Length: 119
Image 1: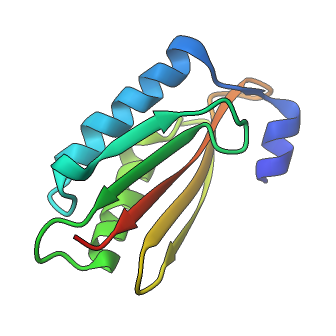
Image 2 (image 1 turned 120 degrees about the horizontal axis):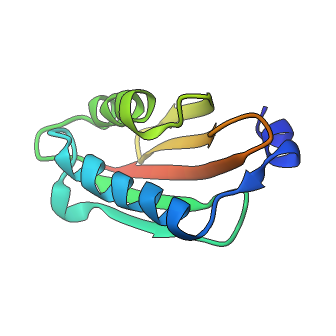
């Protein structure tokens, strides 16, 4: 699905991508399961990963619980309503949420990854 979206759409840039970056910073930092001081979000110019975010779990929160909270946040508040796909992987060392979302048919898309490490 990601390859099809990337072939047919345009990677987000400029103010649109800045807005997504700001949403990630604000909303990840508001999750109870995430240490708000650990949230770091950066934009890139690489179409396959336009947003790179990292964070740590809050004290006493399991990696799986934090990862699920990030996944729910992605689905409820961060993705574009038109289309999205994501993959959540949780191991003992870290969790990653890889994602893509598109604002409309043949329109801009945002790709990225959130990496969560134990607090």
